[in-house]
Image (cartoon, rainbow, N blue to C red; front, side, top):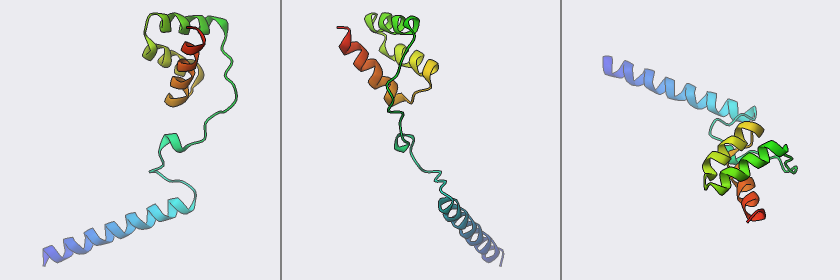
Length: 94
């Protein structure tokens, strides 16, 4: 008898979770949406000369990961955009 009650409670919880998930999707919120699916800022990025010099120094020292990290902290770019920016900056200054 206890097993039947536990099974009914588990099924009710699953139904409630599925209803909540479908309701949140109707409202436009998708908790499973991946970050790279979000729109990126396509405007050209303007850096102050001090930050650009620091990034170029890190690139010259072959510390691209640190350059990406510092760029992200200063501009709040996502990882892909920051990496692309550093890669382009490296190509421009070779």
